[in-house]
Length: 192
Image (cartoon, rainbow, N blue to C red; front, top):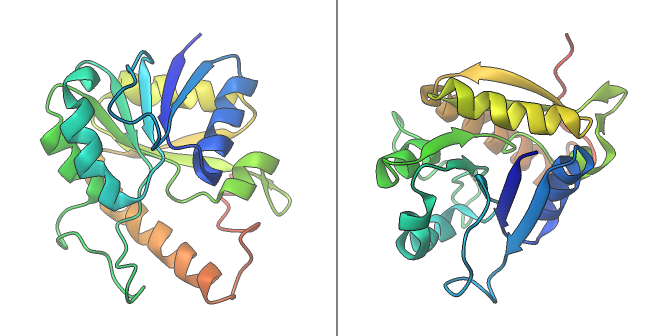
């Protein structure tokens, strides 16, 4: 059984917790009211927070993340204009996080999913799929196994360098939903 510490109790944090708990993993949450005072005990740390919150979380908890799998679910959007990503064109939020946490195994996942599709475990008539990018195969497999045990599919999307493309997909999906082109209960599906 894998243990998870999830930063954030919002829609995504709750949906991810529901998936991994359904597969038998233990889950603890750290929310904004306990940030700084709580201890990270999970083997897998999920950062289910907005991109701007990453810097403060790393400053407060970075030493506790050493040796752990750290899952970045953020989409680094410009929330003022909603028309671009705010990381360099040759980088990603996940790459920045990995640089700030050299003793952790950083993976990118869940940023191309909406909370509703994780909760229902479907996108339309297809099973929800979590795309996972990272440089540590064991870390990706640990997360994939926990997700699959919870009834959601998982696909290895490649190295952490692929996080940039995952963030672009997440950006597109968010802008489509915000522009009411798709519903927040829908999204992109992977058909295999």
